Image 1 (cartoon, rainbow, N blue to C red):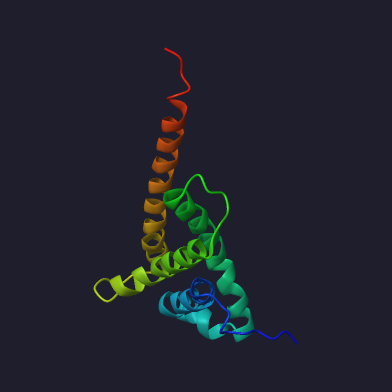
Image 2 (image 1 turned 135 degrees about the horizontal axis):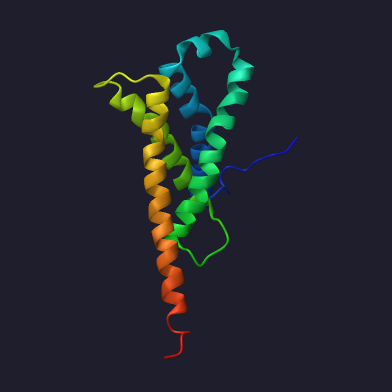
Amino acid sequence: MVEVDLQKTQFTTAVAVLSIIFSLVIAPLWFIFQFDVSLFESTDTIKLLLLCPGISGPLLIINTFAIRAILAPKVLILSHADWAASGLFSSVCFYLPAVISFFHHFTLYGAITVAMFPEFVLLAIAAVIVRQQKKNNSLPNRRP
């Protein structure tokens, strides 16, 4: 059995692990419970736990690379802080429709649409920053 010494664990590593677990399991589980109760009640626990990372895993990966492109586009190595930030952002995307549903009722498809809106904003910001970085890097190399 592997022994883990929690005193040697860095704070950013612990936050990254908790954030990833939260965004891969808890946030999509609540999303399913909130917006598709019949799926939640008819599916057993193991299948739900396997379904949750399938829902949020692609978002987590996309968010990680988008956040890396925004924060430090020239650095190719992903850090624990990138994974922690992307996990928290993915969780916000899942909880945003739940908060808005207090004021306006959503169907499952409406909730998915609301959850994707912050994703599109994040990807647009990342695309603009990457494009600007490429433009700035290529300007000095041009000859008049």
